[in-house]
Length: 347
Image 1 (cartoon, rainbow, N blue to C red):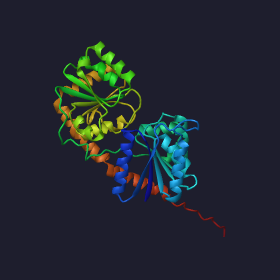
Image 2: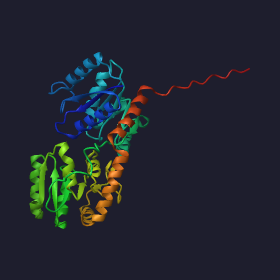
Image 3: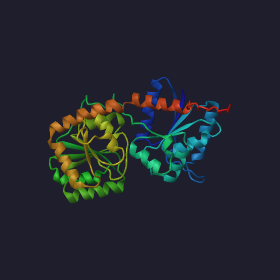
Image 4: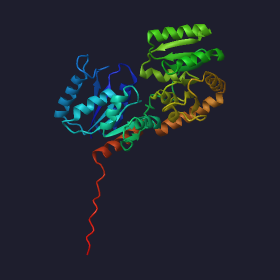
């Protein structure tokens, strides 16, 4: 099968890693996969640069000479570009949004026009359905994790004290607010921070007297993430708004307990009390209580880590995800035959 994958150009971001890993898994199954990268922050109307129409023209030209069997687009801009580009060729488009709500108007349009919409979790499916995307054309496919890279075996990064690892933007403000009641722990933050947000967080940390227990790792290369995650006693992923990507699953694959808010796909990833702990979004007191429990209970951390690895290995390996999508692509290309009923003739 010839598969064209259209993804975002997010620099060292997460979505091009997702597309690359998925493409590699599909190639391993014997498919021919070409990944096309949509220009970062492409505009959708003329007069702005870069203009999405240029990308659409390039796709249309390439697909006119080398027609794919199916196109799989990731995020709304690549999805819109793919739908516009396939019109002359009539190639079905499979759409993954990886979260809904960035551009609801365009996302709704793309979802209605795509042959199939892939949701990463039940919450995303429900949000898409509520927005008007036809429910019969949606299917949930779990997110994938590179379990050869993210695994419990291997050297952890060095640390001095008990460590909480969190990612910039994932409710890290609430973790900072919890630190005064967790005196034996440090917070390591990964990922880039906008300058104004970093200053605001720094001021808040100094007000609380915890700034000396906060470290920033900055953007971390994908291949260096496992060692950093293995250095954690607990990974905190506590956004107040729906957000869902592979970050908590990667921590789980490394055998680390996760404390997460009960929003979006985090409730799919984390089984409360088994692979980690779920807390209500924005409730700092509850977050303090549960972080303290996990930090102080080595047996709980170990049992959660073992269960987390098992869950990822059972549901989220790239070969399993790729096989699920392979079946979906074939279903799109070979829809069930319509059974025609014969008319009854009166005798």
